[in-house]
Every structure is written in structure tokens, then in C-alpha cells.
Amino acid sequence: MADMVTKEHRPVASPDLDVIEKKDAYVVMADFPGAGSDSIEVNLNGDVMTVTASTVPAEVDGLPLLHQEYGLRDYETTLKISHAVDREQVEAELKDGVLVLTLPKAPEVKPRQIKIKTAA
Figure 1 (cartoon, rainbow, N blue to C red):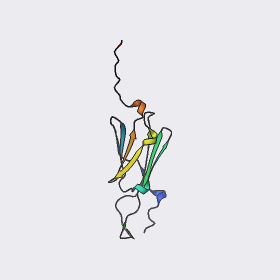
Figure 2: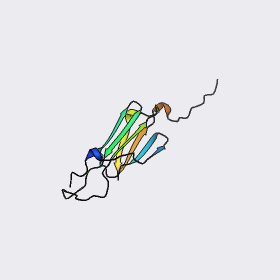
Figure 3: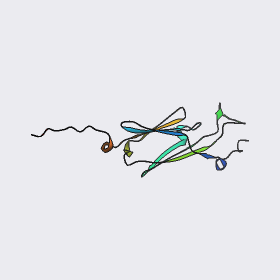
Figure 4: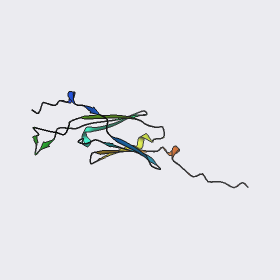
């Protein structure tokens, strides 16, 4: 029964996600229910960020489940990343099935106040 679902036959879903803009960063929150941090990959290649994840069959006390109603699935989403992001400082954290990606703004695009000089 454990071989009834194989990875080749699993659906691929786009995670639900929200994007917010803070003063110094963009924050992406994506839902990956059932996926652990060891099954999520975040790759940044140029201006494209790809996030993939897989859920794994649950075990109870080291024993495989014989019946499971939570679907096993793979997730994938692709985001186009602005030139305004400091790619070297991107961070990812998983908490309660929600992946939080923090994309700091590059120093040259952060808001700043310009001091006005008085002419002599």
C-alpha cells in the first residue's frame, strides 16, 4: 500500500502567497502545508527566484500510514525579482508551514532624506 502514490503521479501546485513592501525590504509569505524545511528549495538565478517543495508521507512512531487523506503534492512557484533587491542578503524562514522570504532593498533604492544646503 505504501507504493500507491509515487512522486511521478503527484500533482504540482502553486502555493498561496502574499507580498508586502516594508521600508527596507519586500517580504514574500508562501504557504507550504506539510512541507518541511528540508524539502523546500529556494533558488535565485539572475532576476528569477524559484521556490519548490514536496510533502512527504507521514509516519507515526516510525510506522508508515496505511491510509492518508492529506494529499501528497509538490509545489512550485517562480517570482521575477526586481533590480531593487539586494540579492546577497535574501533570507528564508519556515514557521508553521509558512515560508517567509525577506528580500532586502538594495541600498541605492532605499528611501532617504536629502539634506538641503544653504547657499553662501
